[in-house]
Length: 144
Figure (cartoon, rainbow, N blue to C red):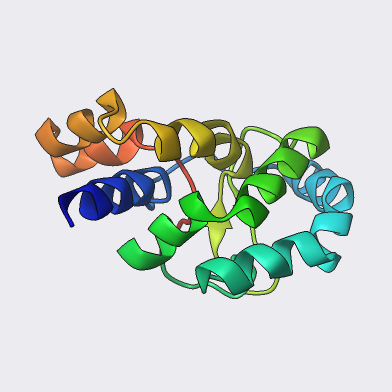
C-alpha cells in the first residue's frame, strides 16, 4: 500500500500545477499544429481510457489514482514518446478544449523519470520549500 501511495504522490508531483511563462501566440499555434495528430488520434484517447484522466477535458490535476494509472499504462508512455517527437515549445500552452494551461515539454521530459523514481529530488524539494518556491521548482503539467 505504501508503494502505491509513494508512486502516486511522485506522479502527482510531476503532474502538479505551477506557474510558468505563457507561450507566444505563434508558439501556441505552432505547437497545436505539431501535435494535431495527438489531439485527434487514438493514442490520447487510449491513455485517457486506461488512466481515467482526459488531458483535453481536464480542469484539475489528476487524482493520485489517475497519476498512478498513467505511470502504469503503456498507452500513456506511448503518448509521451509521441509528444517528444512533436517537440513542443518550453512554455505554457493553453489546452483549447478545456482552457487549462500546461507546459507540455516539461511534462513529457519528466514523465518517465517521475514514474520510475518515486524518491526524486524534485518531490523532496517540494516538501521542504515554501509554497511559492515549491510551485516554481516542480514540473509544469496542468496550470489553473
